[in-house]
Length: 132
Image (cartoon, rainbow, N blue to C red):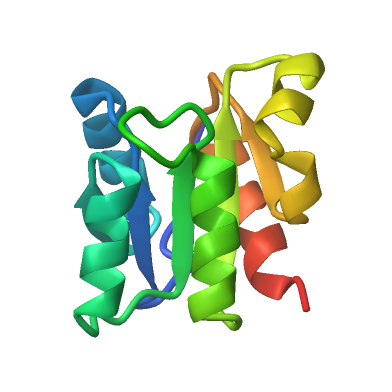
């Protein structure tokens, strides 16, 4: 079945912050199929370096369980402090208790649960991008 969201994104740029290379590649492939341009980072500090370097990004797409310093929720909070207009979407396989412990709900970011398919990904991004 063809995704009804196919190629709706135009040239919006999504920064995928995911430590698992396989997940990052699959997500990047899905986003490219949806018409998004993808930039990648494997941890929070790499994402901040990219953003601080002036890279144009329309959406921060971050895994909640990032290693090496900041988790995804902390990254969203820091990005919001530095770039208040940048939209954020957190992705997770954690349950509600773990999400609370990580502070994911406190960010106000939309949350997409793993595993997800192209249709769920497209819907989550549309909801996030239209959020005021």
